[in-house]
Amino acid sequence: MSTFQELGLNEDLLKAITDLGFEKPSEVQQKAIPLLLEEEKDLVALAQTGTGKTAAFGFPMLQKIDIDSRTTQGLILSPTRELCLQITNELKLYGKYCKGLNVTAIYGGASISDQARQVKRGAQIIVATPGRMKDMISRNMVDISKIQYSVLDEADEMLNMGFYEDITDILSHTPEDKSTWLFSATMPKEVSNIAKKFMFDPTEITVGNKNESTSNVSHEYYLVNARDRYQALKRLADANPDIFSVIFCRTKRDTQKVAENLIEDGYSAGALHGDLSQNQRDLVMKSFRNKQIQMLVATDVAARGIDVDDITHVINYQLPDEIETYTHRSGRTGRAGKTGVSMVIVSKSEVRKIKSIERIIKKQFDKKEIPSSENIVEVQLMSLANKIHTTETNHEIDKHLENINELFADTEKEELIKKFFSVEFNRFFNYYQKSKDLSVVDSRGSDRDGGRDYGKQSNDSRYFINVGKKDGFDWMKLKDFLKEQLELGRDDVFKVDVKESFSFFNTEKTLQEKVLAFFTDFKHEGRFVNVEVSEDKGRSRGGRSGGRNRGGNDRRSGGRNRSSDRRSSGGSGNRSDRRSRRSDDSRSDRKFNDSRGDRRSESSGSGSDRPRRSRRRD
Ligand code: ADP
Ligand code: MG
Image (cartoon, rainbow, N blue to C red):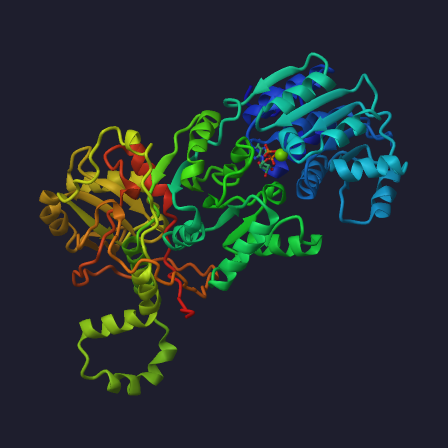
């Protein structure tokens, strides 16, 4: 069945669906809606986040309840206040043409008497968090003795959060003959137990594999010494200048501390956890949605309600206690058809957990190295260069130029460029020059290389090219583009790493002349494409920069300007003089010859045209 009409929904609902712009039902909707409309049956539905579960139970419920009655007929339990509000809003949209419909949200942190009043006005559907619901039942503020449909949404999470007793208690106030619909992303034992206990012969539907994580999320782990965890986090952020991420910690205390450290170090970060007031949490979420906060540090519980679509990275600062929770965490990214990366920072003692998670998510992790200093320096420098290159000239500046020109009358262009970059860059460079490498050797790492010797890459040339995501490229498209233009073979272009407005790729050294010759005066869609060699200077195998000032002060702060004024790259890409740049050759993006490896290393870089300014704090 491929249309909403065919699922058997009534006109009022179909009209709302048209307004919402939903073109066709999602898989879980296709499976659940006809079933729930036709039969009074219990249901267990397993589907990942973002698959449209709200509509899967919402539409049938809206169609089946009697809107002319003021009795509460449907009860939806959901783990957090945010989700509760989200569901309520969605249901109101779905039911906008159902005249007389009253959906009420019940959750903690807001006036209980206001909520009771709303219920009294005749709420046919209540959407509630278990804690507040139980509270209202005990105060006789709601009557759920006549409900016909109960939904346990995000059941795994509710149980995870310790709501088992509350749920049991609430359900004991509902009629025996109601239907119960349970929705969950994963199926741990606790969920099947609750299904057994409260449901009668439920129909089970599964979308995708049980417990499987979203397919457009790639998974990476970074092995570090436990004491380097925080430095590692900063590097992951620095190597991805456009990062927009949720960082998960295990405890409220760690969450608060990591967020505070990040803020102190100049990152745009915020904390989200249960010790904050509702008001504080709302503010943080608002800033995050507006992208004023780039790194949201959160506990699992607090982050449960986050439905922000364009999160580029989920970073597991610490692994969750329950490894099932990992699926929820990584599901925060890769939403709405976008790709995302879930990164895990692990210490040696926890690395075995990666295997267990792989079994649960049915996907392999890529072992990656924390970006080396050189790598970060290069990414940041090119990010800055590219920003300058594409900045439109502001001619208001002209009238002040006389004195400036005089000052630089004797400075050569090349010298001037160097000086100019140094202003922004020195502090950053100095910081990273002092910092040691963070990766540690993983004993299980070797078997993942498939026997390939990734160390021998001296026959490669690495290039910088001034096109990126905003020119419509992803790693695959860029690879195809290069292969096509240069008439190269399937494996001739590798290690393609596409950032926002520029990219890197490798070829065999023997192809270097051909590549550079081709891109002299080459125009793509009306603009010059500039390719430069990223010189292989002082590479250290495995990305280790061993002899560096170990224990150097690893503090850096970058007051960053993350306003989202993203300029389109309008500038012409005239070949600039070929500077040699360092390229990091850490094993971090190995697997260069296979496309899976490429994809992963590609998606790890959400590039940027915005460097961050660093204010060193000494
Ligand atoms: P889940 O509960 O499975 O995580 P949601 O019900 O919150 O997912 O839905 C995720 C998003 O997808 C919501 O913004 C919702 O409006 C949208 N959505 C749901 N069904 C469809 C559909 N059939 N077509 C397009 N968008 C949909
Ligand atoms: Mg949902």
